[in-house]
Structure formats: structure tokens, C-alpha cells
Length: 286
Image 1 (cartoon, one colour):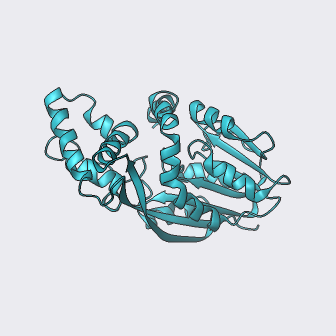
Image 2: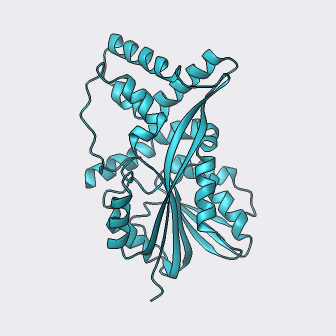
Image 3: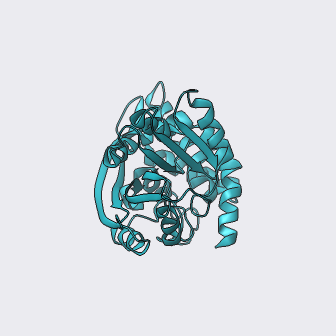
């Protein structure tokens, strides 16, 4: 597990972090509806302090900062220096937000300092999620709130289902461990409940939130399909699946992925289905 964490940190400070920065505008647009739903669940009020855990290049941090105002504060923690740098560059000088490169699962955090623990797709990657949430809970005030959004299962999310289903039979792949750290490790609501309960949280509520989002864009339908293939190749698991494949296998796989995206509706923008859970919980008052 320690080696996995070291590899994850290295990746997000290397190729993955750089690719997410390059595609930041599109990725934020895809995640916007889901992030906003999580913010509404968190219900940040003027003057509150929020711990924002690992969620891209700062879009949710800025939205939270606007809600808490000058009398509040948002601390955004992420393991990726490129993403934190992008977040800092985007933030107006008077934004009540701090940005810190660290692993929220183990970083030193001020005890009992925050009203809200928030995350937009940032909590599914912990090696030991129960330990991570127990650690972060200590940074919450008594009675403090948790609100985050996480992906549900692979089969319900077209951005994974379409490309990875298309290459099945072309590229050999071991079946994934559904509880291994990764974007879908919180796909099972019962597992989320077990983790948060063991970490000491109460009042756990998990609500499905689904939306159709624009994934590929272009001046024509063909260009939009090409955009979807490029996006999934550069920021999704497809790149890892194809990394060591010979050119002929790679070409067949990409043709199959393109055909899969061609089944999606839309002309200059392909629409795909996204399935998430909005999770709420509370730190006991005493």
C-alpha cells in the first residue's frame, strides 16, 4: 500500500497532473453539475471554514469561497503540485482560500478547525479510506458536516463504460478490484456507510445524483467524436490499458473506442451519462 501511495503521488505530480491541467476547462465543465450538487448538500454559510479535499484545479474551492465570504476560509489540500499551481493562478487575490500540497489522509491539520469537510471526486483514492476519514474527522468541529460527491459503478458511467467496454476482447485486462483505490472505489453505498461509520461519523445519508454531460466537443459531429476519444485517451484509464500494446492492437482498440462514442447523441457536443452519489455525514457533537 505504501508503494501504491508513492506511485500515486508521483503520477499526480507528473504525467497525470500535467494532463489534467491541460484539460482543466473541459474537466471542470464535466464535473460542474456534480460539484454544485455537493456544494448545495454541504450548504456552506457566511463565515464558515471548509476543508476541500483533492478536487482538481480549484473550481470547487472558488465556489465554496464565494459562499463563505471574506469572513470564512477554504483550505484546499491536494497531492498534485501542478493542480495546486493552477488553482493558485486562477484564484483572485482577495479570495478567502488557501492552497496546500499535501495528502489529506495524513497531513497535519488543525484540530477542530473546520465546519465542513468537502470533496468533489477527491476521496476515492485513499489507500486506507477508514483511516483517512478518521484523520480528517479530527479536523472538524464537533457537529461539523461532511459533503462529497463520488462516482458510482463503472457500468453506470459512460466515460468509463464506453471506452473500456469497447476494448474488451482486443486488449487483455484483469478484472478490476472494486474496492481498490480509484475513481469507482466508492461505487457501493454500503461500503461508504461502513467506512464513514468506522471513522466515527454519524447521520450518514447517500443520495444518487445523475446527469447527462457534454464529453466531446468539436465544430462537427466527427470532430466531437474525435474530441471524446482524445479526452478519454489522455485523462482516463485507456492510456494505461494501451501503454504497452503494439501499434496494430492500439489502432484496433482506438477504432473500437471511436465507434463506441459514435453511438452517443449530439452533433457538436457528445452527451454521455454520469452517475454519482452525494454523500452527507456529521461529526458527533460530543
